Length: 377
Ligand code: ATP
View 1 (cartoon, rainbow, N blue to C red):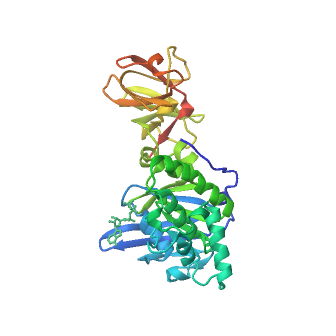
View 2: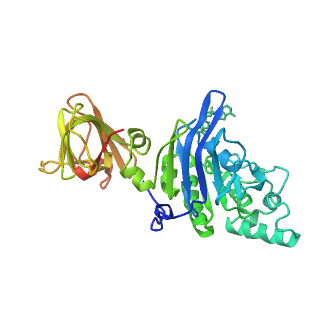
View 3: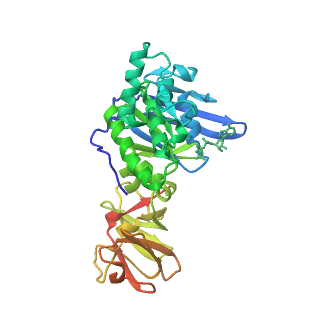
């Protein structure tokens, strides 16, 4: 999984840092449905913050409450220390870029961008200069006189972005900003969006259901489930140290083994796994009581095929049942003697015909105690 961000300046981890957005115990109910449920969250200046989660988890509703298009049923929203809960959308220092882009079909690119400015700057020259600046920023100067139907999906996305940024909002809210683009363009645009955000220093809050996209672009991610926060963390921590089974399963692929704690000392836990009828050793610094039911989580890329058994490594034996060739890596599905299916990945260093692993082959998989985690929730 790729990460493009320099995470050396973690403003959110400074104890006295003032958040630019504070969401305080916010609930939004539609009849009997709790779209957002008693949710609290701080977002800091200059963050590229993603709201991630499965369909219906409440991420769009939360974004719309930040924009002022929905009013919370309970709780408060502060922007730059000011209570925004009752402030109408047009008076908030935020702008929203919609998934549909919502461009006016009868207006040219330049007119669409200028529309967002209304009378700020007040003079025509000032507004025209701002439109030119925005078009240059997203590299669409050559398209100024075209109408939206004369543009590609990627070009329309840039116009919508330029329009949303034209008023220099403190915070830009983006609802699935790359949803309408094909995979290749999406990946390319992810990097452009990150570069643009870093250059402008504006706080971006993005709704996405695509975990790879969130991992690539974000300084931090809030994973939502049923209107609540499951975990808030940097992409790296979210991937390496998921705090719950749900988070582990949602982000990337993972092997989960149910078991219970046999012993725990010097940050090393021995877990007996019922699925494999074997012990797994895991590095874990938090206290674990003997007998406690836990799940051991191992990412597929942490497992290696090994011909020799090393004393400090965990190991499992199984038979390769399926191979998915993805070009750069292959995913191997392995059946363990008890019937459980697990997966591991390997980079394809050799051409396919020369790969030493094949269907039906018995393999010994090993991984280090630092290459797996214990989940207690
Ligand atoms: P998706 O990724 O599918 O857009 P989401 O995470 O953005 O999903 P929301 O659109 O915030 O989810 O919806 C959260 C819940 O609230 C869903 O169960 C949805 O059906 C419900 N909901 C959202 N808006 C309304 C509304 N105006 N009236 C009734 N229920 C609504």
